[in-house]
Length: 261
Image (cartoon, rainbow, N blue to C red; front, side, top):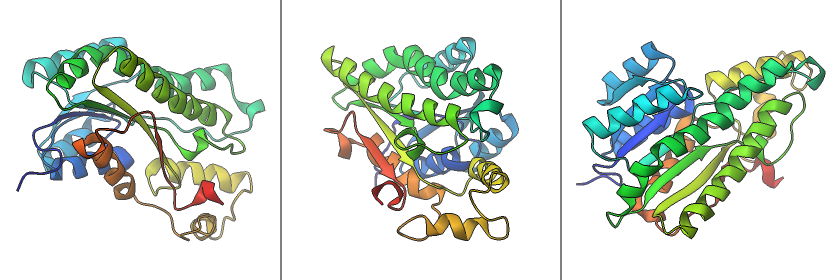
């Protein structure tokens, strides 16, 4: 029985762990052919070996690395159907402690990385869209791109930019007649290494109690639990599949009800 993404070629950034890894695993189970791009070569290689994917070194802030990715995809697969821009950096500290270098580093990965990926791979995505099944770009933002959180100004701002970039590209591609859909996913608190690092910062600034931070975070969600990478992965499978062929420019919030409260 064919999977929901059978034979679709997918590039996923930042997939060595966390949400990216969850998306890669779920899409592979649905029949997709996966290329993992990450600076964590060891982690990316281990995941690729486990799910039958390809791993490439990719610093998303590097135009040269993106071009190498494009060349590899064109040479080995001949097409690209889905681009998942997942790579991201978190920074938890008050604005007065942000250096300009901190700010630029977050923006270079969380915003510039998506711009470079979309720009570099646009031609292949456009060609894929001519096959009768639209190409799909899925940008991983955050609920922090919708509502504000203290002591993470650079991160919040970058994720808000991802949200609006996704809408802008959706409209631009549609206006030019390109069959490329573009949507953003906005995870809430998902148990990943990045969130664990953020929780350490929240404990330090007193946002959550040190004795039991995870129970406190779960209590902020109406569903009273912290999410897992697979919760986000199934949203990405939907947006990558032909089931969402009439869906572009949306923000898919997967957060246990956090921003609805």
